Amino acid sequence: MVASGEHGDVPRNKRILLLSVGHACVDVYQGAVTALVPFFVAERHYTYAAASGIVLAASLLSSVAQPLFGAFTDRWALPWLLPVSTTLGGLGIALSGLSGNYALTLAFVAVSGIGVAAYHPESARVARIASKGSHTAMGWFSLGGNIGFAAAPLVVAAVIATGGLRFSPFLVIPALAGSVLCLPALRALDGRSRSGSGAAVRTGADDVASFVKLSGAVFCRSIVFIGLSTFISFYARQRTGGGTAAGTAALFVLYIGGAVGTVLGGSLANRWDRVTAVRRSYLMAVVAVAGIVFVPGPAIYVFVALTSVGLYIPFSLQVTLGQDYLPTRVGTASGITLGLAVSVGGVVSPLIGSIADATSLQAALAPLIAMPAVSWLLFRMLPEPAVSKAVVAPAEQMADGGGETASGLSPTRPHHG
Image (tube, helix red, strand yellow):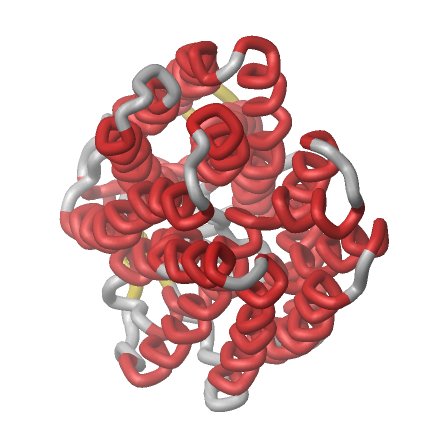
């Protein structure tokens, strides 16, 4: 999987495996909110707008908080955030099904969103140190998040379909497992992640204009992805005439395509470059989203899969592009591209829900076709940046005895949130 190497009592490949599984446990809760929406509608009789407000509650705080946590990790090492934020993310989702009070439900999913927001910037830094800059190792760490996100509909369906929303406390189990799994990896770092000495300091000039354009593309991608995540279960049932299983299957396909897209993105970036790979994937996403909206019957699953791949090829590549556009503020760049990429779209979800209540789901989802087109246009104005070099602190150089630097996330095998 990754090259072996010892630091403390835990080999490097085992450290990355533990962090990757922990990443999966956290990202279950990114997907769990939208996976819970059909059950809230069925059991509590929420309207589309009310249900999408739950997605907004998780997204709004997360989208604001994650860049802030990224800025904090630019200044201080906060490894204790990994177990604490993992537990917080799971606890909010676990409590969300216990009260029929809408305001309390919003509060609980907001707590989960803050936990998820706190996790990602620091986990990316810790994984970078643990991997000693290995691109393969960071690829495994990224894949863990994809798998967790894809597993969310299955985990939620297995628990809630068994006993209803009152069984939601069982959803805390992945969080408890993830918080425990990260502890050996943190201990094995021998204090490097607990002190500032382990962090890589990247040099170079910030290209703020390019980063702003990149952020615009990230926002548009988020709008279409979160919009589909929120309503694809309902829409697939309408288009196929199926039941709950048909909707859950569509959401699972939407999420599992992320693992394929992440791996494919690295290969395409090696073949072309990151900007070209992202630009072409957004063109594919335009056609795929149109297929979801307009093509009836079981073929919708094919277009859901193509949409997922088209939206996830850019996801991790945009993270490293952001880091290279802002080489002196890697944590901030990661917080914006990771946090906003998976959460800001939730701000638009209530609008989509209101349109669906007033007209139809098809009419509400049709504007999403334009979002990847806007991202494509923005990427036509972006340069492929030179890869920033990392200057490793002297203490880390002594600990590693030289060798490959902890240069952060590579342009070809980056981190996913």
